[in-house]
Length: 622
Image (cartoon, rainbow, N blue to C red):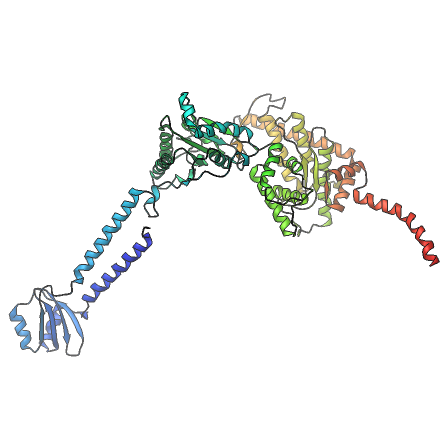
């Protein structure tokens, strides 16, 4: 039998209370109230026609000769002599027996008190029996319990082979815990998944539950923290009680940094409620029995703010790092997300994986979805490589601004700016090559040069210097061609300055400062921020060194473009004509070769004179 909704009970109680008030108001009605002196004056003047009262009561109701009614209160209940005097004055007197009114006056208060006690009993029983929809169930855990194992398995996870190998041992334990217990082995009680947003930490946790075919209990770190002190600790207790009832199972806490931040005044701060919740979590994780078959998995992209007690052996024994996938992993992820999507014959997922370095699983899934939307928008039944290329540009730079009208001057400046980037990336030995260069406005950029980057774990000093030179090449091209500069290099300067500063303060790549870490980079998974560890004098020297590096590379790339001014003009003109050049087209323009369409037109022009003379005799004879 389903429970009666709380709102319905409140409505019924409100209606009954209103009815009781109306009933009391009805019994208390009897005309306007008058003072006792006024009543005596009306009695002496003969204006009182009828009175009615209850034996032993001081409340008196009456009717005047003009038909109006009144109510008054006597100092004391009237005696028989007073009543006989009123009768002699011509007043009809009616005396009701004590308690002669309707019994409803006593039933209403009793009914209301009974309803209040019943509601209190109903809610208290709901709190004792388990979670409910009542207003007092906020101490219950908000975790979702999936009693059936998720259908996701390790076959649906790509790009994280090392993480899967680490987690296979957890799967084996959940499948056959006796084999480990016989050898006296203690399986890790907790596994912390660490990585940047979008790499698939939650997806991998579901895959572990799917492989082990055990229930999956999921909660978010923010579900435990409330404004009421003690609620978070109660929810943690309820979560682990639920896990014990469903053991063997996996408890997954997403974004655990919301509740597991370091206690005290350290990084992340804290308050009493969060610390109580964390203390309860520490107790619950360390309080499992030795033969417990409950595995706690958690995910975070802020491992630097977690409390050290949470990371010690016996709680989160293992930390599994899940980084952005490499080119092979990206290809596998693309093939997984491409299931069920009709792809055209020209689609090359391996090539698409090469041109998307730094993309995580969520980015790749979004890329394929954007490509499907583009194909559907244009009425195609299959996703083409052109759709995937356009989707990649949309994910990285935003949608193309086809409605934005640029003046011829702005288009020319943009063309030379992007041509400068492209030539620097092409001719500098340690720079990335050119994948695409375009002057089509997209996002906040009027154009962009997309480098052909490869997955590299080690960046050399020469490569970093070339990257700075490529970033400055757009401004150098503007100054070289137009003799003036524009505001278009704002983001280029920001990138160049960051690289130069990190070369000095973090990577020890400047001879004046040597192999010293002047700054510590924290929060690496969310972009990072620098913790300064040097004096004001050192800061001044670092600023001068950063400027020296940038000015040196600016002069270098400007000289490069000046030497190849003819090639720069040729690339800029090609961009003004075609707006976009891919890698092959850009290479042909640099080498001075005609593009494919131009080549075909020239071949047709050469063939036309040989065909026309053959047709003329026939026409003439006709």
